[in-house]
Length: 139
Image (tube, rainbow, N blue to C red):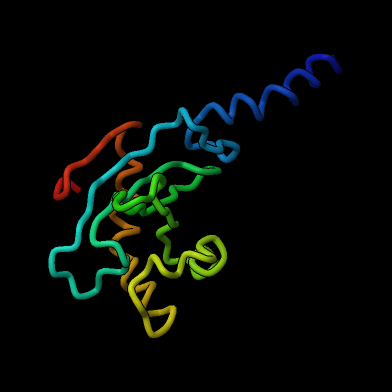
């Protein structure tokens, strides 16, 4: 009986981790993100310093997490990426050192208001199948 309990205790988290939406799932490189290309076209409240990039969504630890990645340009080989969130903790801690990726803002409230529609759009991406790339006006 104790061998069976031990086997269940060891294998249960592994079975849960296999589910992309499970609490124990942490994305790996083979996990496909959902993508949507976005670009600024006269928006007054555009939150990003870059004029174009991709919104990406992936499930992390049972939560939808939205990212913005700049379009590559110049001599950069890797895009700069930040978390798109209306959670002040995410904005100040997770994105620490990435403030240059945002357009100037007066206070945290203004930044949150600017990011809210992009977070909402990005979260809807997670409802799509893995590997989906959505066109600019599809969601």
